[in-house]
Amino acid sequence: MVQAVITSLVQNHGLGARALPGAYTSNEKKQLLLFGGGSAGSRGAMVHLDYVTEMLAKAGAPSPDESVAVVGFMDSPLWIDI
Image (cartoon, rainbow, N blue to C red):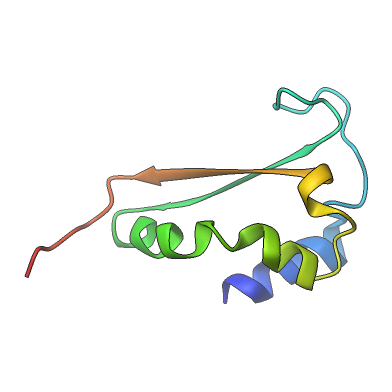
């Protein structure tokens, strides 16, 4: 699912294909991808966050390391210690 959404963002909406002046990053040439979830969804986001840049490259984003700033936001991750 995550790969499908990233592919859609790259191919249908131009994620990583163009710079956005004034983007909310320290480098104004990068687009910002805020990746996360809430509760149990944030647990899933934690698992995938390290691989989002690789998924962007697989989806066809040109130089995702240089064009997209990936930031994680985990809101109240559900963790049941059993």
